[in-house]
Image 1: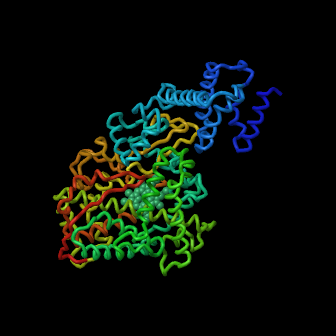
Image 2: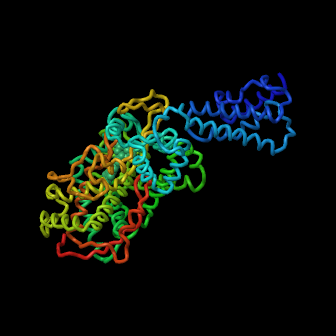
Length: 580
Ligand code: HEM
């Protein structure tokens, strides 16, 4: 064996020992005999460029599951290459550095040129050059919480199909969106992978295929009309407490109080109680903070799924996620210990306490799913209610009309939570729909869907989506598309009334709860809650923006973090003589 061959052999062995698979070593097995002996810097540079191109070719076909392997390879390849192919060991550090620069430059350049070239499989889709070249641009927009607004502007410029990443298309064509989300459409993509990569069991949000179907069966049972009989009194009880707590204050951040209300409701409905934020007047356990930290970090990491694992290992970054998981586990353990408190809460169904499923979930799995109820139901509903109040206060004529309607349907002393009365509140229904249209709680419908890399490409609405394409459903843009709704940016609750005169109104383009088998499991619950809370508020108070509060500024505080985070909405409440 020659000296170079022996070195290569040692390196191969030691790399195998640290877990680098044989197939990856092929990157290093460019035959030494091809190289001239006693190579000069120039000829080495050429071969390092080739090494960069070989890496691109390899990773282009084998998308990394995590950045750890590519990172290790990128760090060790240039020095290994030099040693294997006989560069003098006496070479100075600056020459090694030079080799790295050449290697990384050739690799990056080749990636970028390919992505923006006409040879890329998504080349036919229009979009900004920077988005075609790198995901870092979208990551930056997501960091500011305004990615959905940026995508909306791109759709106005480029049309219904926009390339928003090297392998990502954002879509506003509702025919395509329906095909993507319905049965047989596209699976949830790598955005949802954080949990799938870890030891944490997937919740309903992350699960795919049969696992999802089984979970969804349980959720449907937990929120069906019979189960709702148990949940509804809890909503009414908390909403009544909410009103009486508000009466103790003249001016409040209504968004913050709505957060506390929805968390308390979901604490009761899911775990038989435990948060008591309304009583304390604050989020004493930091539940909301933990959820928002978890969603913010998760949403950013998910923009580039393969960096999730290594970045998650950085202290502080993974901490938000881990703390959150532990918190969910603690609540589950507590509830399992306390029992059902005489009522069938969501835990009763999710943990299958009635033994209806073939396989009973472990405590860890049930904890993951039941905490989804708190995440999925609280911020979404609180944000929609806050937006409804903001939109009504910003449109005084609509405010007057909805108040008159509620007063005429729900007489003083009547139950504002009566579902039969809610069915008569057509204008209020229009206000809620219009809020969901203009301010969808998941502005990008959650994460991306994907044509999986290992599957054949798909034709959707007559267009080809090659394997590996991520597809983003731009709910916010769809809802504000003039092809689907007349005066799309205006708050016009009457567009939802039977006698509406507005020319364009496309109900199939109204998707705040998503579509298909993974649509919102709690849609009816959310509607019941929002009708009840708004009726209780309008019967109890006159509302106006607090003195000195700039109502027009509030929308600028809205940030997408999968769901939505937003700033304070200061409102002055004056009790009415319409006691509930
Ligand atoms: C205004 C309030 C709400 C809105 C706008 C909303 C919207 C959505 C959307 C868009 C999704 C799809 C997410 C994705 O594909 O990643 C979703 C999923 C889900 N939502 Fe809601 N939601 C609301 C309230 C609720 C409530 C109150 C509950 C429970 C009581 C709930 C439970 C769920 C669950 C369990 C899922 C996952 C469904 C599945 O994967 O099969 N949501 N929601």
